Image (cartoon, rainbow, N blue to C red; front, side, top):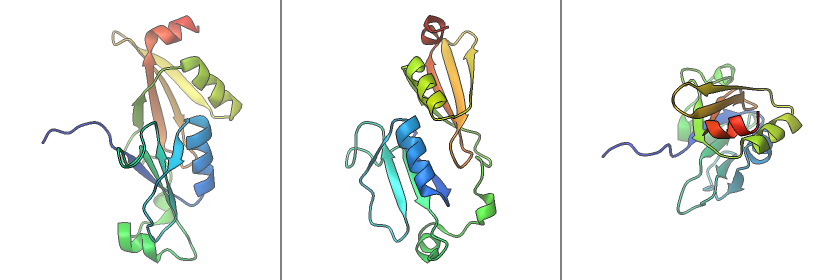
Length: 148
């Protein structure tokens, strides 16, 4: 079976609310169906929702007062390792609406950096979520030229 599109990525966090706000208010995703796991969390969707998809981002909350459900399901991780992307460098999404995203990032105080990839016609915007995970959004380069 060939590998298809990115299904989702998961982030463990001690601050589930900061992640929810970031992914709904900045990225524009919607919180939706999530199975009743024995640990806190949020599944975030970009368009189609369950059962068509399992979402694009799974926020995994760590309950310091009751971590056993998470340990039983996904295993234990040292909370000091839960910063940044570790060995994964970034998550990338195709996108349109560059001007709107710049405005949203600025209005939420999210620092970002941009660059246009030579000869590919892609304009990239990079920024970090509240857990330090790097996100890349790939826009048509013509959008960047039109808003320059």
